[in-house]
Length: 298
Image (tube, rainbow, N blue to C red):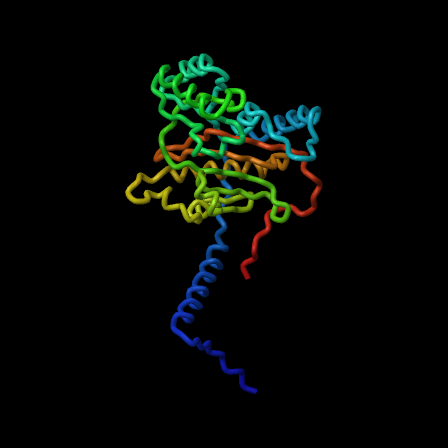
């Protein structure tokens, strides 16, 4: 018999027809984009073999004191050294258990400096005043130190550090972690309570491509702050994308790295600065399900 007549969609209102057409356009764009997933760049300055040797040594050392089948945080110096193998450089923070030590650290770094607490219960509470910036000299540093300890607690509880100032920019957070269902996941968002409360974080599977991270930083709702919102100067998104790719490579190359937190990462108009970082290691469980999960383009 003759072929069936093509079905013609009918909508009760023009708005529904427009919404349906918009969905079809988005689907077509997804189909088109999925044909070009981007690439995972190569880096001449990455020391993959040396990083693997460091990880084996560190796991042997950690095994003497902890259960390394569970994730164990690295000491700060070891974490920073491992990240440096992948071209990720963390700004040094000098412990300041007393005012005199803080002044000596500031003299080595050069003024102006920042004084901040690193206690876990204060790390994500900038509203409590645990960070003092742009301290221009010894008198201001001693005054800020006294104020912190008067208002927030003893130095042993606050764990204050002195750090050199970096160019102002947008504070961001980069994380990598292992999801039981999806595998290694790279996360990005802006730092601060508003982003945390809104859950304004973008995620991509590892290994991430250059296209993945470019879309990732643009997909959060607060992305306009990176691109010159209300006349502000755009920040160095190329440096930000490069950092995301380096974190992705580290986790992809070494399955023992089960957690990376870079917070905050201050992205300036030119360059960026990683002000704090943690790395967690574990012996990876045996698995036969390798590689990222992706939706096929039918």
